[in-house]
Length: 171
Length: 396
Image (cartoon, rainbow over the protein chains, first blue to last red):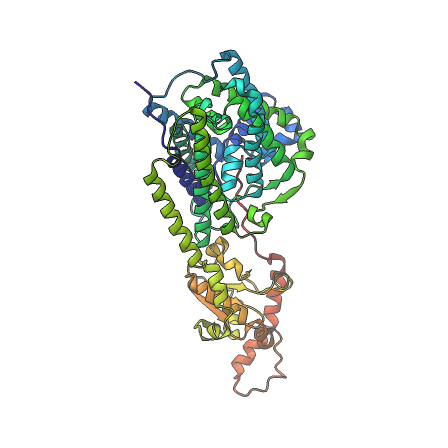
């Protein structure tokens, strides 16, 4: 079966905006994603080397805030939901498939290496910038946070500035 | 009044809500096409501006919604999470994320969404982001200085720019619409097609219609906060407004009786409050009445709220606003705290010349003048000027 067409972007944006508004109304906070990665990383470090987690400020502070249970975090539950929701959407629109997307000019191996490296940069940047495209840029825009909008401008501005050098990966 | 967490919805149930919000989030992202990296980076090369359209429409919708809810007093903006502003980390972190975007083809949310439908590159992106977070965590002592530099606090952008919230929202909406139009032109040129700028047009017209009606109603109807605060500036209005009184004697009697249903709302300055306050009293300012804190404090069933201020006028203003906001069981102390001090606390039987005081009143006041100052003294340690509800923690 052929995959179905994507939703009209303005309509999808409208729904996403309403969801964000409902989220703020109910919980007082916005959407996010990278925070769940942080919880997972801290949880792994704590399990593998508890003594190391106890000696480093970063882990210590986080564990203190979360009653020593880093996975008991709002974003962890939200991200589990994202996995389920996206899977359902892929299922109903016939888009479930193991594959990767990249320009014909590069190999799958280069694509995988670039994905890992890009993820590394994004993961690092989201920690430094206190949030990613969802948590800082989108949710920050909804509440008109100065920091959120600066981060948003820096993400998209940065991406445009660097895009030329990595064009072979995509076009 | 929102947010509903943690008062109407408990912190545990909030996790269940998070799961359902996540499901909707993932579903919308996937339906919008955010599960393929080629579509995601399209805006940086001009061939597909889906991300910009979805992102900007969502941001504008939520922003306008937050403004409207705040305007009509349905959402307490003073306690929702506002991303804090740390100038350097916001810029440098953002630039690194931008680089990660064009190299990796995803952002964290979209990579999770894409991995869910089987994109292998997304799974590697997620693995990479784990490493990135680990590097930051391990190197935290090195990055901490940059991370915490130039802290502006929970500032909002219209304040930073010195303009009104509505004006900024209006400009941002204009920018978004202009961007939608211009990017479609670019997209057509790059792809050699000629798609109409806004499609489907009907949807667009309907959405703008709703936006304009909401916008106009917000401009025409002043927000209740401004309106009520203005109303009580009119002395004649305040004098004619009927609010029940409680006499100094009754207040003294109920204080001595340790009446649990009595709640004193102290409208004096927090400084005066911390210097001296009556038992069972809470420090309020006129502005506090519009916050969620007031909803929690004034709505306790069976409690009677007695407003006090030095001269009594501020207390009456506060009671009027509370009445207009729909709160029940409101009273004001007759003559204010000044009279209460004169008649009860500093009661001096030798100075009283008014004849119609009977002996019972005299005896009662004498007793009250001894005991109430003691109660005030005992209360001193527990008198904390308003405990401000903490801002919700959020962000990534």
